Image (cartoon, rainbow, N blue to C red; front, top):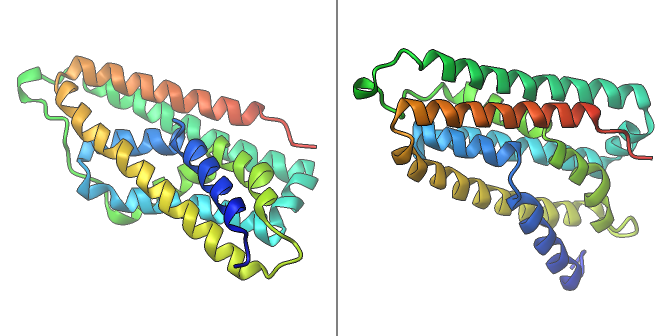
Length: 215
């Protein structure tokens, strides 16, 4: 085995905790579950997982080290991601405002889901601008890679493990969202939730923008 069993168990424990901690990916899964239900949002979940895997692959290929070493490149990537998270937050606020004139008796939380491409793109963009995923990929993930061992077997084990855990957690959050949708059937409650979620995305974007380059 290219990675020791004890190290793999440590990696599993770390990913379980880090991945399960609420963040943009999990918030996206929950909000999508609330709005569209569990079955229609699989492209969003797949896009989010692919986005994180891209970050991890960059870290394994050495691009992560280049990103860390380049102050200007890091700043560009950081602010692009921050701007996207802030955009999503503002969009959620505007969505909640547009609901203010919707009669409660005719409002339904579950609406038509966007196209598969739009969902996948949104999931991937949120994941790749996720401060938690960036920190994990650039600072934490490389510690589990043995530079003296073949890279491909390690990549298969580490990336497959991460994808499995990430998808599982996102399904948990999305399922929780579908259950929460019953409580949010009221337009007022849904509006408050959208504003809280939008604020969380905006704060995540500001946090990413203010995040300094690791030395």
